[in-house]
Structure formats: C-alpha cells, structure tokens
Amino acid sequence: MLDNLKLYKVLSYILIVIAFIIGFFDVIFLMASLLNPSLLLYVFILACFVIYTFASYKFLKLCIDKNQVVKKNLKDWIKANAIVSLFLCILLCLNALTILFTSNETLIKYINDMVLQQPGLPKEITAAYILKIFKGISFVFLLIGSTGLFHIIFTFRLIKKYNSQFN
Image (cartoon, rainbow, N blue to C red; front, side, top):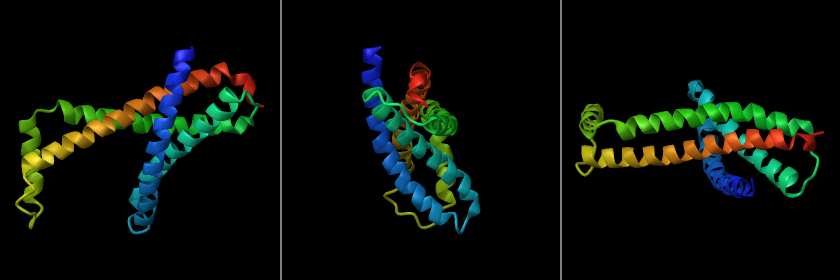
C-alpha cells in the first residue's frame, strides 16, 4: 500500500499542474461563453476537474499525510466532482485513442477536407504538419485522461480506507 500511496502523491502533483493550466483555459472559456452560452457545459466540466483536483489534494495533505479529521463535505466535494471528472477523463482517453489508432490516410483525408474550408491558410501549414500536431495533442490528452482516471480510482479507494477521517 505504501507504493500505491507514493504513486498517488506523484499523480496528485501532476494533476495539480494540469489543473492550473486547465483552470486558466477555463477562465478564458468562461469569458467566451458570455458570447456563446453553449460553452458553459465545457466550462462546468473543466471546473469540476479543477475542483476535484484541489479537493483531492486537500484530502491527501490533511487526511492522509497529517492524519487530521476533516468535514464530511470535503468527501462530498471530491465524490461529486470526481464523477464529472471521470466522464471528462474517459472522453479524453476515448477521443485520443480514436485519433491515435485511426490510419494516417484517413486522418489526412479529414484534414484536407478541413483545410479546404479554411481559405487563406499559409502554405507552410500542410496536412502532414496538422496531422503531426493532431497526434501530439491526442497523446497529451491520453496522458491527462489516463492520469486522471488512475487518480480518481485511487481516490475512491483511499476515501473508503480513510472514511473515519471525515466528520
């Protein structure tokens, strides 16, 4: 269990960095959602991930590291936001795996169709260049999604183990 706790701490610190970045973009999306209210769903989902990350970090620091008793609402915050975060992480993984396992020819065909709809693109931006960026972003999304999934699973197990720490 000690090794799992070390892994959980490492995943927590990785997620803190990711949460800061996502939180920054979430604020931008929030401002953009004033013009396009359909973005509010994405703002909500990303905010839940950020809240989950910081709530689970608080759980780690107070309950696990310092063995303190905390209010029961921290557990509620973690669980509620973990469910939405689980949805986000599964979607990130599925989308990334779909792109990474789709053949390059199919993706280039899709990219060429997209490029035709964007007049005035510089000649340096080729389908191969966009494909490389597309695959790189997909790999990053896969890492974020899988890190989040593992962290959420660990968090649920630790909440059950440290249930007596919630008052």
